Length: 200
Image (cartoon, rainbow, N blue to C red; front, side):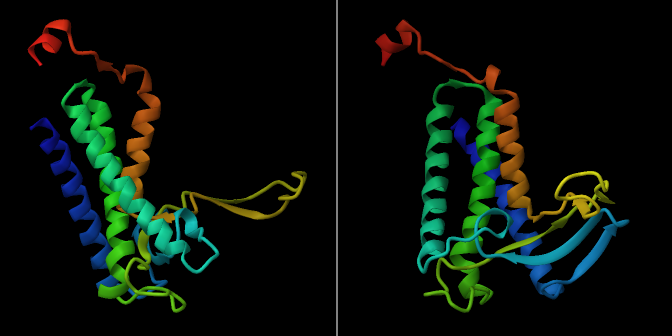
């Protein structure tokens, strides 16, 4: 039953993610921006029709394929948590997977249902089902500046760090993947002992 705790973690993050998205949708206009802490932490309501950073598949059923892939990924990650929890698996690996599962599920809900519930699917969508746009709102423009004149191509051009607008689901995926990359050396699955094998 150990897998249940990781599913509960995922469910909690999904609920917070969905509440935050709906609160933004219900209380802000598309494109509206609110300063939360100074100028470096803002809520900025945007819709993401594609993958990350607004990237889209440029053909009619691209979004449908993307949503289908996301659903398969969610099912695969959920099964992996169940399978690995039955073995002697590092708990940080399971936590990392639960964070990724939560983020993927949060964005799958947007893609699958928001086109119908919130009527936010693109005008040219073949169907509102599975064509919902993901709600992004977290914006951290930490540094604004200008590239030095001597720099090729970008000289004298303004820049901003951190420019992408994202949501809690994206943050959950990022943290989970970061944990897996940073702690990969400690992630291991113990092989069952011969006694365990005999008992099986």
